[in-house]
Length: 120
Image 1 (cartoon, rainbow, N blue to C red):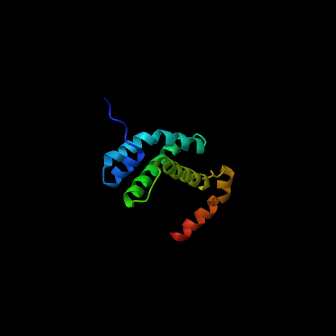
Image 2: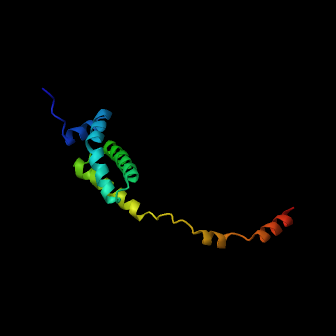
């Protein structure tokens, strides 16, 4: 006969008592669903979703070991992931500079030569 899976509340209590194996069970239980949730929120960007979930789980572990406030684990983890995904959407995207713009911003070669001659 197999033992029943521990409840989320039992796992949270065990993590708070210092049982790292309990957090491994939380990770195993929720990483895949959280990754799918993050992928949907991030438009299918799987690699970024992996990073978000990793950060969310790290934050969750720190929070669980920091205090004893009541937590409904599943919605709480999803909320952390959602907030991190929103942060990613707000992060300004690096826009590539067009080649013409780079040329416009670059110094012309003659001014570079004159500046070097003055320095020597």
